[in-house]
Length: 476
Image (cartoon, rainbow, N blue to C red; front, side):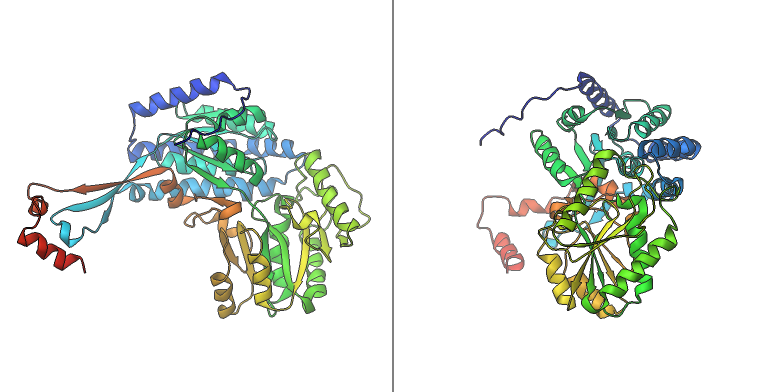
């Protein structure tokens, strides 16, 4: 067996190793925390979030230079608190060993699966939802009985500092440790020999995280996003579909990993959908420039990237519609845009958009739309708008994606009893609720036998009559 190629050295915060060692030692002293202790961990975090919500909202607003307070409440605090409540409520059942069947040939015996904590878990948090995408996986890891190290994004320093202070008030550092720092700290973090590593972010960075984890054979969960399509059917009311797509695309100014990335529309309904979408967006946001309900782009680099996508599409012949023409811009609030006449050569159709730009792609038949999706990397989410049950089933059977919403967008992510995760280039593994508990647990198979040992009847020497009978009964 050949050894893995050595990774290039990076500057490392030596404190990371010490923190990891402290957590490893603490886990060794309490490798299977009881349900009551885990519930207390979750309850303490939930109460701290409720007490500290004003400071967190203010910090996230500061990082974005304009983050809707209601969006932070709805898309960060609400699902975080509900996820903690869900875990508290169901933890005892999740921890219970599950009984499994023992084959007749191996009786008498019993079989169970026991769910053990893994040990020390690493979580790398992105900037777009700096609270929810920290608290969500942290909830699952603590429910499973682990110690946790969190690397928060350098792009959201105020919210990272606020969350670090909040968690320090709730947990000792050998239970939950928050790591701050730039890219090189993140690289060193990914190389620690965690028992599991969860990363949320760009596909390109996900590859590097997986490469770093491979040197320690650390299992990874990757949530990577991608180009999530929406399909508008030939019969769905356009006002309803446009409004729900508009909400999903404009929440957090489109800086959401499961935001609709482009919309496939029947060719004969293209203009009508464009009109309906524009009206829907303007109803949600009558104006943009100084609207506290509309979130800004996180930083100048991301704003420049989105502007480049618009310029590139326009230069290649796309029709680019600013939904607020003539309205002066304020700060980094980029107004929603529609793009028509797009093609695969445009960058907006190659990379995840991660902003309030929405390309429309015409199709002639539903199978043509599905073929368009299936010819591309598998997305994190897929949205279908149409009330015909047969068409819904057809879409579900003939596409692959991390998750699906029928006649809505985004909201499947907020369901605590549904797994969340990607497929292929959009990620691997699942978390949320019970699936998160399982991700951060070792499912240990346990076969138990007592005094009676029927298996000795098939021990050597072979060729006995009873052994031949066993072969006849069970090998056929």
